[in-house]
Length: 522
Image (cartoon, rainbow, N blue to C red; front, side):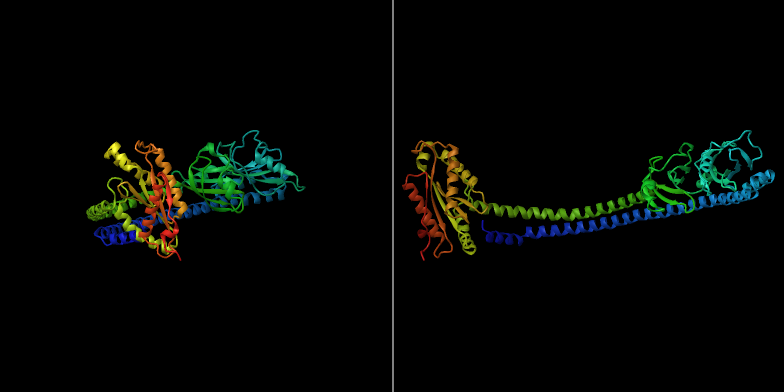
């Protein structure tokens, strides 16, 4: 079917009631979808904004917690640092052989009483024996030469304080953090250790005062990752290493403080951590809120918002459904009327026996195809086909078999035509016509040969034919629209003449009309 005629039909359909109803249906549907999408986008943006606010607030909270715990730890250790530095200067200045033990004991007791974090103050000799302490009773044969901090100071001349891992006190059984300092003689040789210990329990009580979720965590650790204190407090966790955690591996080497999401290596809980390395001491604090505690309130609000949104969308959908249903019913009616019109129109242009187009169809298409071929400058081929000895076929096998033979041949033609623009019609009786746009003589010949091959494969018996099978003859005429005088009538006449020439030559073949027969020679 030509494009011009199809455009005319589409334009006609656009003016029908169905076209208007379909356009209105699509408009209403598009409006509803846009409104519903707008609600979803706005609510989705608000939910996402609340999600980001929840994490921003949590980041601020863990950052403040980390700063507070870091400052607390730094103040506590600085006090011990200051008192041990003063005591070390006094001991080394007075000389170890002139130590006034009762007076020094009183001083240590006084210092311990004004620093609540202190568990005890101790002075050890170069062999690890207890010289003086704040305690009233010294255990017999007490010696701390095997402690890690003692060994460290004995082997290192560093005069700064050393923060050791958590140990259990031999005098009280409490868990303590040792903060020690090297003592040395005037010649620089090792003279012993001055030790101040901080109670782990003191940090545990302080961390317990913070209002964080039950799965949150506060951690004080050495710079190498060794845990000193942790909330929630579990004694078995003290001394474990965090060196493999994401914060120690990835973040701390590049930033002394920050915020990071990570899964805890201790209990496997996903948390948002604020971390901070102490400025003056090799310690790190971590403050973590469980991801669930951050997300849960947001999720609760999001579920309520989504529920309200769904109710709103359901209401809009119900209202729109009523409108669309009425439009759809109208479209169905219009479509039925249009379909009936199209069916009547198709019946008028279709051969009822073969399902191919009829002569009216060819007449309607022929002239528009000629104009298009002339406008675009391509050839137009017309093929007339006639089944050989078909009257004898009907006489021998009967008209029902003849009708079946015509249907089979029509199927062969439809199978051979590959392009949508090609048209096959039943011209009348056993005659058929092919209209082939943009096809030259060679292309038409190849198509006729293909039809011959397809028909022969059908093995349709015809004892009334010398060949013993059903065959056809064909005439091909090709119009060169660049030449003057090419008309539908001339093409039909040329193809018909070529057909009869093929029959005179013995049938089961085809002839091609000369170009001079089709148009007027220049």
